[in-house]
View 1 (cartoon, helix red, strand yellow):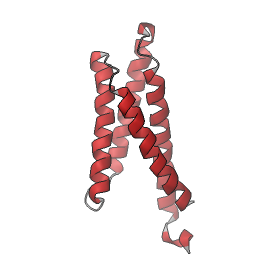
View 2 (cartoon, helix red, strand yellow):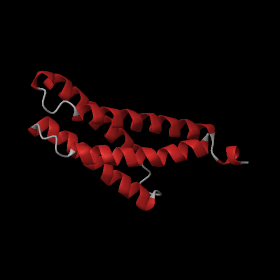
View 3 (spheres, helix red, strand yellow):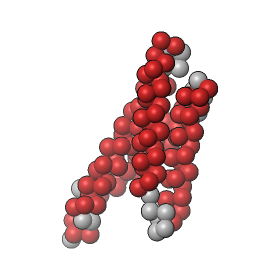
Length: 119
């Protein structure tokens, strides 16, 4: 009965979101290691842009009309992640990445539960 509650399309969407979240979390953790490496400025810029694009994509998947507080909170968290990488790109300020990493780790924990339930 459980498998009929969630459609295949919804299961596929959950898998894609989970993959994007995993990639974003991995990229944030990598970006944190580049703080003192001036020679990797291009890599820092590319990673920051990739993280911001993933966060925007995830933001755009939110059902703001029907998602209630969960959607509002996730939107706020994705904006925080974008702010953190924006600080890296604009000011070489890595100080917000630690909180962005914690945010993505927590979101990933939730999506782990969702993806296992939807499997």
